Length: 487
Image 1 (cartoon, helix red, strand yellow):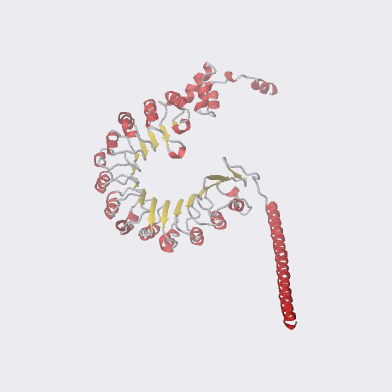
Image 2 (cartoon, helix red, strand yellow):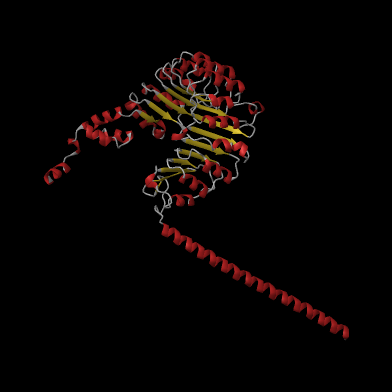
């Protein structure tokens, strides 16, 4: 047995079969495999096998090396099914680079592009791509209604996002033949006209997801149309953070009767009436995801406190409070949520919450695996020390990922925190060390108080001595004047 082990350790890597080498190559990036390909014919053959497994391409990872990007696109382009270039993945893709790359990606099914100016100049290439696309996310790409020519040929399209573009929507009525379309997002399309949106709803009653966030022309007629025609709707994103007299009169409550609605994202300003909608949704209690952005004062009315605490099936809860200054109000809401035992993801942004309040909330959520505390300025690293205490048993619950600002921290079941970009000097904090730190801090505070008292006493003595000198001088001057008068 020992001899066999010694024989195995001296076998050259080239004696491994191609499947084993492919497994080894899978730990390398495509860029690194391009270098390994030049080592020998065996590596070249395995590299070709590796390229066939590359079904997703993130263009932004190679924008600083355009030559490598072009070469890699030629090698893996025909195998790629998902092409991404978004702000979230870093960098910005130009129309010139897209023009060079698109001919390589002949079998794309999912396309995600964001912040690309001049995309309308690539009409021929884009129209060809759309014939095979199932997903097309073209966000903030300065698109006009001419994009309709691409969409007309997208007979396989299932999900379409044209958010933050200049479209009026004149092509929407002509999309009736796109029977596979299930998701569409037209958020922040300020020029979108209501009449074209109404035609879209009538022609696509099978829509499952609709996004209309920050749409200036959203009206009561739009609400009624959604309710009348989109009975299959599961995801709805509506609302506006800017106050408008017309939008403030909209009644959203009928949307609570959509039979399959399980995902709601709602933006609200202080003049918006959405309380009845949430009360009815809580009564039906079928939502699994709820996101609310509030631009209002710290009152129970705009927080919809009584409605939110009644949901029991929520798995994801997100709340963004731009002007909610009272931490007690939001923390009380979180602790009284009836869905705590089912929550898996929670996002709390721009909120004035405390370390102890969020810590208590997390302890009550056994299934929670993600919490985002972005721009919650009152949350400090003391919050992480609280989580790392023995009060939380991580062995009996899901691992928790915490996002604080741009800092990602993970607490594992081994009772420690891990973070990729930020390193702590002490990864584990024991209770004894914490107690010692607290004792030393208390001693330092007492010493400082004693010093302050001594300083105050010294200053008081100095003041008294100074006053006594002044009085002596005053009496001496009076005595001299009396002597002068007598003389």
